[in-house]
Length: 190
Image 1: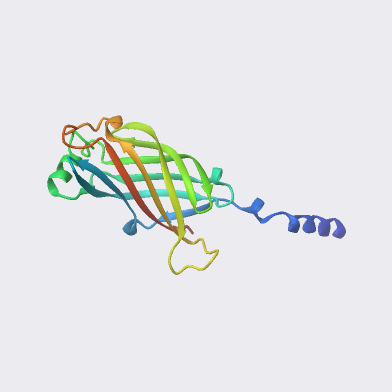
Image 2: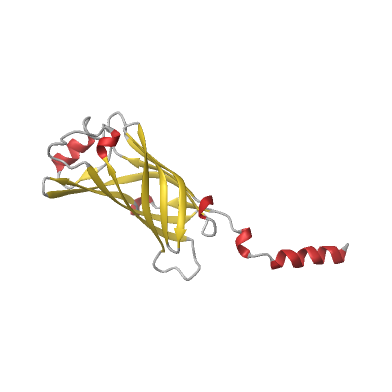
């Protein structure tokens, strides 16, 4: 019996480490994470941020297909670069934050290429869900050592057309395409 156990142990020791890999669960650092956006108001950009209320993030650095994201973004506390824009954005013609105080993002697939990733998912705004593609850059946070994946920063970029979600207010003055710049700070869960 002992020779058989030794043989099994030797075979297991020879298996690649990647076979044992599993997704790493992360908690979001809410105070250092936000969704940034920019939209054109004539020739001038309006910028702003939206807090991320919650996120469940699991990253499998060996097999991207095992990774997942579910995020809840706080539209009711979104801020634009000037007060009138904030009021209009939260109002019934754009985000309708009184009726839809949050938006959600759920990933469908992720593809990694080194520290870059393509993230395909579904974004729900005003109760309307549409597919979206985001480009992500993953970084170890400053102060972590090589191989330490306990603290990660993720910078995502992409764009959505607000009209696809029924957010058509002031379309004669404000552009349709919203540029997204999202910074997420993550701490390994547990």
